[in-house]
Image (cartoon, rainbow, N blue to C red; front, side, top):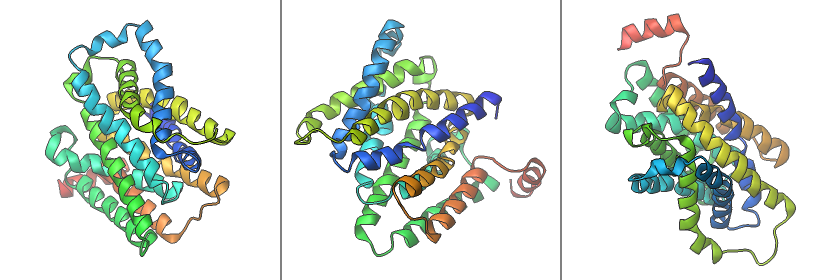
Length: 299
């Protein structure tokens, strides 16, 4: 990857490594729908005026249907699924499951995007990574129906992220700024969720840590993160661009263990290592000489 690609990769590893902690804190006192509405509402309140000032929204003429679809697939849907999922599983397990996103990109690409398809060594990596997900689900949530339900919701969110990553590569979004897309996505999501969120507001003002968590989710983990994400996908592509998700758990697990007292067990470690190896291989990562030799043998 380019120097810019690595910089954006590092930024995204942090920006999307921390939201699981704040979501876990927020859903203790707020309904997940309220959390997501507030999160995208904060992001829209910051980005829309900026987009209007720069005339960026004019680029969206004739593209609002695509923007609406992307908003549900990439923001509203995954945010809700993760928030509901974290009512049943730890924030660290959530981040580990989201790390399967590059694998899901590669899997979806088999049908929808020839430019992102995998074969040979990358296909082996895909299978290894999926084995890691199976280990996480089979060992860490074994015998616990609620935990399994939460894990499935998070995997569906990862599938939404993967679909969104492939979607933003389409010609529809190639000639418009990421600011206009992200601002519009957040505005559409906030508008769609508002009627439901109003019916689920808390009876009293939440604690300060909950309010701060929602603000951080909106400003840092949504507004800033999505602008960085679009720039990363544009720089390195969808399959490589989503590899930052297997660096996120390093941040998330540490925060979960240190601040929330969550445990780190064998299933977490084994599953995570398999996902890392699989994602790395499935996106073309390998030491140059070894990778060249294996590709000659397998391609």
